[in-house]
Each structure stands twice: as structure tokens, then as C-alpha cells.
Length: 511
Image 1 (spheres, rainbow, N blue to C red):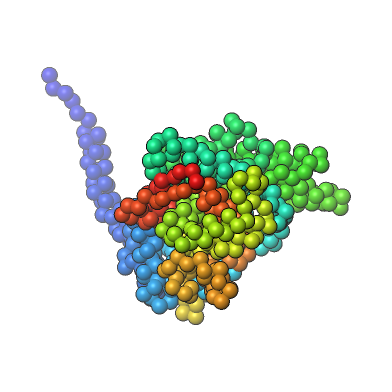
Image 2 (spheres, helix red, strand yellow; image 1 turned 180 degrees about the vertical axis):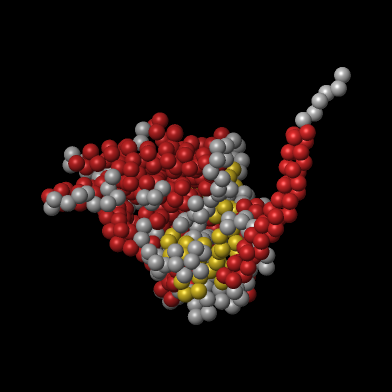
């Protein structure tokens, strides 16, 4: 029995094949044209600046950046160094980029964060992760007003309050480290994760004090880990991807911190005394809202619980991973420089003893001049955040010869600045900040950019340095330690700030 066929169907299939064969060359031509336009646009923006001769469509050098971020930025720095202008060009995720090695050019960017020049972005997709209310995304009077309201959080009185909390948490964790080391036979272990956990508890306690329950802290820890992992992965905002998990975790964290803000607001309205950073912030916020109400005005901007929660999250993220980086590098540096370790131990012992049962006071910390110099040198030698990404919202003339095109992602390198100007910059030498004769902190002040510069300079830098000084003082007083040195152990990797590749493996025992 024969099966009949529909001639019209065969004809349609034939025409479809013809259309496909006709469209294929047109599609290929369109793709080729897109690639050509992208290459021409890249070279027009790049001009004579050194950079990749050809770029992969849309992705550019993203694969190299994700596979080996340290190597990628080393290549950018090498190109910028050879150029003589301190600049290098590249292309990432569909956006033209400019790497800045020269300190003075970095200052030009930092000083011009405003509505018609540069905006800080912290991460190429930072607004998705940190939210619209984060301090780093504000400019002009709005940013200036919020920084003014934040200032009471970092007065000497407030810092003294935090120092007591910091010491209590650090000592508790150091004792756990020592107990764990004793129980495993003194085996060397990496301290990066223990430092991270210690800093997370310190930040939670200093920033939001009594407002996080134990259950909330457990959820917070899990979500914070998800956020960290997604922060340094490919930014694919789809289910199943780390970036999506990070974005959702960030939203939950900000919601939790917003609830803490609500509790603090109620307590400050009731006349309670500040016990944490949030209380100091809310005390000022409540005062300003009362003044606005008395004048018949609406509440000041950025005073809602949601906005305060987002602000706190920015503080916590900056304090958490930056401090983890600095603590690891401090331990590594003290181990590899026995003379520095001996001087820190002697200075601390002359001022404070663990047997006293009393915390290190603000006056004692102020007298620890050499330990403070070591802290600054750790931060100079290993800036936790090596780059501060900005975006050019308008074309900006950076030099007499080069104007940064609108839409460019700009990367001032605070790491490269740290090795410019300073005497014997490649050496770890705290005396550059301690010696009255040298005073390199003054002479080369414009090259010390670990905390940024200009209107967006890190508002918590004093807190960060205090935390590092307190940790070193307690660590050298309570712990005998030795770094397990292996080949490449101190090669820096992004986690998401710079840390030793081996996680800083050390042997620990009670002093």
C-alpha cells in the first residue's frame, strides 16, 4: 500500500531550507560586522595606550580575569609601567576599561567622584549585590550629608567602646585556636577561615551588638559565605549560579540588618546608652528626625530601617574581608621578620599584660607607636583591596593627551601606588612610618592609598587600623607561632580580598 505525500509540505520545507541558506550568510555577515565595529570602537577609545591588540566580542579578557585575577592585573600593571603614562587599556564584559598605575592620576579619579565625572562602583555589578542605598554609590551633597551623619560612629569615645568588644571577641577566638592546636598535636593549620570567622563575630558584635540572636547569627554566617563566593564569580544572574545566590543572600542580610536598625531605633528613642556602632548611628539619626519633625520637615534621607540596613551591610563587608586579609598578612610578616616581632612584643609587654585581667585601653594603644607603624606597613605592603573600580559617567580629560571616554570602567590601583615613591618600597619596613627622621607617612602620603582618597576615602580606616593593632598586640602576647613555609605560600590570591595562597598555615601554641 502506497503512502500519499503532501506536495505543498515538501515545497514549504524546500523554501524553508532555501531561506535558512540565504539567512546564514547574512547572519554571519552581521556577526562579522558587530565584531569589526567592536574592534574599531575599542581601538578608537584606546588610542596609543598599550593594551590587547584584539578583543573577544563582549567578554574581552574576562576569561583571563576569572581564571587568574592576580596574573591579569599584573599584566595590566606591566603594560602601564612600560607605557610611561601609567595607563593600560582592556575590554571586559562589553565595557572598555582603563587601568591606572600612576598615583597622581589615581588621585585625579578619587578627587572627581561626582555626578558629572566618576562614580565608585566597587564591583561591576555592585548595585545588584549591595543595593541602591549603599554609601559608595552616593555622590555630591547626598553623600556628604550621609558621611557627616556617620562621623559620630568613629569618634574616640565610640572607638574606645568598640575596642573593648574587639578584645573580648579576639581573645575568645585565640583561645579556641590554641585549644584546637593542642588537641590535634600542634599540627599546623591555615588561619584564614578562623580569622574570617573571628572578624565576622567581631563585626557583628561591634556593629549591631545585642540585636542579632544566635539563630540570626547562624543564618547570617551562611548567607555571608554565599555572598562572598558569588562576589568573585562570573556575574550570571540566573537560578543555580553563584552570583544569583549571592544577590539573594545579600538581600536577606540587608533585611536582617534592617530589623536590627528597627530594634536600635526603639531603644534609642527610649533613651538607652549606645552599646554598638548601630546605636551611635541611630542616636544621631533619631536626633535629626526629631529636629526635622519640630521644623515641620520630612525625615532626612537615608534614615529608614531598610536604608540603614543597607549602610550597615556595606560597613560589615568592608570590615570583614579587608581585616581578614590584613590579619593574615600581619602574621606572615611578623613570622618572616623576627626583629619586628621582638620589637612589637617588647612594646606591648611594657604597656599591658594578659595577667592584668584588664583590656588594652585607648591610651595604651596610642602609646604603641611601633605596633601602629607595623599595622600601616602591613596595609601598605598588602592592601586588602588592590583596586577601586569607578565608572566614567561623562568623558573626562585625565591627562593632556588622553580623555577617558564616557562609560569606561576605570581601575585605579592602590597596590601599585604602594610601591611608588617610598624608600626601598619592595622591603617590609615599619620604620618608614615609625622613624621621626624618615616620616614617609608624610613625605609619601599621596602614595599611601590603601584607604582611598577624596570624598569617598574609607570612613572606617581608624577602626580598621585599631583592629589590626589590637589583634597583633593580643596575638603576640598570648601565642607562640611559626609559619609553615612552603613554595609559593605567600603568593597572593583573591578571596575576595588578597590573602596568602595557602591560607596562612601556622603552628600555634600557648605562650
